[in-house]
Image (cartoon, rainbow, N blue to C red; front, side):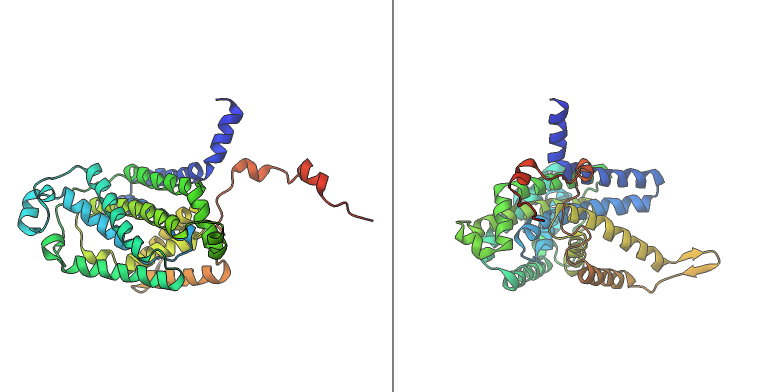
Length: 360
């Protein structure tokens, strides 16, 4: 491959390369501190990054605000737990599981892949019913889906252990494993948004009537985006199960929905760069507020915020973003290729030839 060909290839995929490099740099810096608490925070941040990028695939490209994606995360997390926790415990507590899950313990990759597959299957069934809706009606339907999943998983004792905990899930603690899944989600999101399905979906987002008049099957492309998004969110749920080692249904409800949408809105809901950088920014702010809640000594003065200020601070930040920069910190644009920023703004010859001549 020639040098110019390599540059064009890097330029084409610069969004994924640039974002991956930023995240990898953050991981290296945190690991250099050898602070176990920060490393755990980075692990959780990378899992949330996978979920937020997956959520962007549907919300960012379709323009339909979904409150139900954390339900797919719940489905994926419990699927991974069913596949990987101790068979003797499952036979005792989860008597409603099928035999292939009850009698076997599957490895990490199998359980996480199964988590994504089950979430995608549920999304396909759910999407066929509600994908023709749009606007506020669609958002309410996705919220209803979240409530239904939470209610089912909170009461199906023989399968989910209901309000008790699902225990004995093998834990994984490696930022680079979670980083690999986050990069995989970025690649899927980038390839989808650059594909003809992504272009058609964004066309329907900008003007649904015009898209339909151009023979775009809006319901079909939305369904494709929803299934792909749910698959990746399910992967994130499977990773979260292996990160925690213990699952309870309450984790996958309003609080996690709020923080996920906050990350997407703060960064910029209309771009992959916004999804990734929003996760980094919100994580930084939340951790700073958490540290201040615990108390920080500045000289002889102890600075301490009241408990629960994390949610207040995050809400204030979202309000300020929506007021002063409604399209997010990135203005819903992708990070530019470095050499593009240095190129002079020269009018192409063809354009100059047909441009009107200014009369004196």
